[in-house]
Amino acid sequence: MTEAARKAARTEKAQRLRQIYVNGTWNYFRSMAKTALQSEAGYALYRRRKYDVEPVFARLKQNLGYRRTNQRGTQAVKNAIGLALMSLNLTRLADWALQRR
Image 1 (spheres, rainbow, N blue to C red):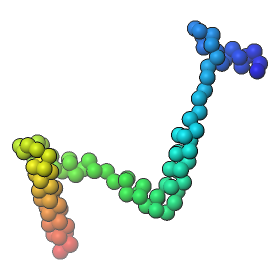
Image 2 (image 1 turned 135 degrees about the horizontal axis):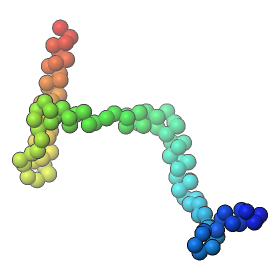
Image 3 (image 1 turned 30 degrees about the vertical axis):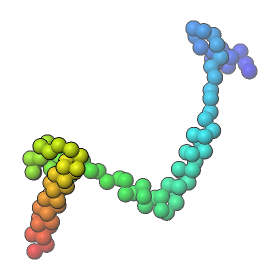
Image 4 (image 1 turned 60 degrees about the horizontal axis):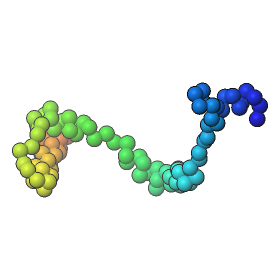
């Protein structure tokens, strides 16, 4: 190691050598994920993740005025949001049917 490299490797305050750690497990799983995503099934799965879900909630707020729920409990909230989403889907279906005429 040259003197310039030795000086660059040391921290300014403590004058200790910096140490680099490589996590072999991380690299292994990273390569596994990369090969899985490069397959045909992996590409199809990854392509499905690209859809943006935010416009759905924006339409709920803007068009239906649905800002908060009055229900309590997980199941009651799931039911209320499910009904709101169904009504949104029905309005979109009606709009689509009118455009097809």
